[in-house]
Each structure stands twice: as structure tokens, then as C-alpha cells.
Image 1: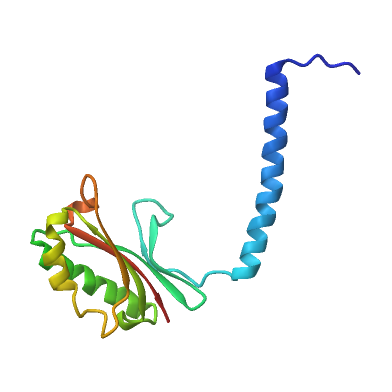
Image 2 (image 1 turned 45 degrees about the horizontal axis):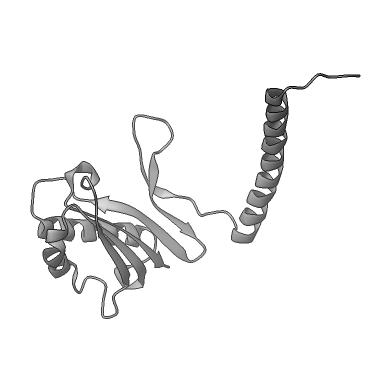
Length: 158
């Protein structure tokens, strides 16, 4: 059977082949990754919207690690009050996951304004025990969602 092909026809055929291969290999890769990592534990502390499916989880566990979603402070106040609130929220989430502030390995800090760095540090100091976790601090362009002056997320162990 003779088929006349055009450049667009070849491109379309190549796209279909590539999509099939990606689907086959992608599923294989996902299956292997899931088999190696195991399935995540039940996620708790889900943040819901008016949709049926949660937007994100407050935390999730994988093996002996717990990943805590970003926490912000959505009320009027200064960066010290916001930092204290955010750290209190992280601590609550860690406790609900079976961990603690002393078991935090990594913290990411997002500031609405880098000028608040020193005041944030004052409120932050000592909250993670004698050996604080590694930390990255950045100032966000355009602010932190929900008008929080600071947001933090972390990784800990259980």
C-alpha cells in the first residue's frame, strides 16, 4: 500500500511515536521508582480548597523523613511576630508527623523583605535546639503569598 506523506504527516507520526515511547518508559520509570522508595505514608494536614482534591498536604513522609509544607503568618504584625507564629506552626506540624524541632535537618526561609533578616534571625535563634539545621534564606520577588512577612518549610526525620 502506497501512502503519500508530508512533512507535517511525518512530524505528527514522530510525535505519536515519541509520546508512546515516553508513556511506556515513563510508566516503567515510575514503577521502578515507586518500588525502590515504597509508597508514601498517608498524608495528613491537607490544605483544602473548594475543590474535592486537596491543593497540598501540610506534611508528608517518605521513609524516616518528613517534609513540611511552607507555613506563613496571615495577620497584621511585624516580622518577629510572623516568625514566631511560623515556627510555632512548623513545630505543630512536626509533632503531628511524629518528629520535633530538634530533628529538623533543613529549613528554607522566604522573606518578603531582606531588610527583615536580622529581626527574623532574633526570633528564629534557639528554636531548633543546640545544633540548628542547615538553612537557606532568600528574599522573594513580589512578596510572600497571603501577605506574610516570612514563610518557612523544612525537612526533618522521625
